[in-house]
Length: 278
Ligand SMILES: Nc1nc2c(ncn2[C@@H]2O[C@H](COP(=O)(O)OP(=O)(O)OP(=O)(O)O)[C@@H](O)[C@H]2O)c(=O)[nH]1
Ligand SMILES: [Mg+2]
Image (cartoon, rainbow, N blue to C red):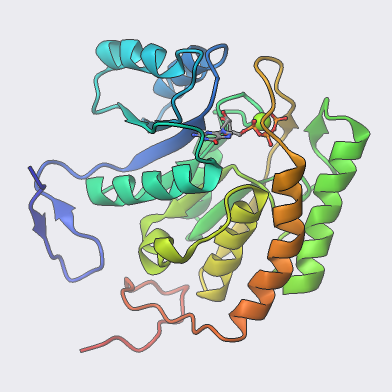
């Protein structure tokens, strides 16, 4: 049954079935070696973070393990969306964002399952939004030197120069454009037309930051240390790389023809509000 919503005068409905604060979206494909440890770690954090796993039919039984942990922690703390096949990171996140908005979450996080992102940093990302008034906090590898552990030099250079390239083409002042460790305030995801987001890989991460920035939201890079996965297999491919390379130019060109007007905004002093519809 649909949750009843009460309009509060802001863009955020209060759900009658209990509005929740924080949810961490973790897309998974064959992460059986990491999933239990990462879920237990997130469940132990203070303040509490709920989790939404989007599993793309992992043949290694990742979803089954998630269900066992749901029995232990409750399906109101660990949520699971199962999709039939490997449909890509971008659509996994978009499906998850819609789910999290519908459930009433205020802060929605992106994190990988493979411990490249340290779950303890979720608290720092949340604080950057909740206490410092930012709308999108980005766990950044390149804001204080280069903080990448155990990646081959070629991959570090590619990732670093991807950021330089994105800044050069788009003008967006973000050092780590492909970062996938983030905290969104819900109003960012409410403002963006999620169905218009078209990229799936690293370009998806760039597109979400670029669109948030164009809408005038406050982005903040929070320094993190990124560590290469020690368990499981990488899903990085040259297709993902090509999509990002050409996608950035496409994003910039399209932005000349697009108007970024927020239709539903909350009153917030740090943000210059667009005129609201009566
Ligand atoms: N649902 C879903 N999750 C995916 C898909 N591809 C990757 N993932 C997950 O997305 C997260 C990031 O993928 P990774 O393979 O770690 O990609 P990466 O960090 O660029 O590469 P490595 O660190 O080298 O593995 C992990 O939690 C993966 O399990 C996909 O098609 N669908
Ligand atoms: Mg990874």
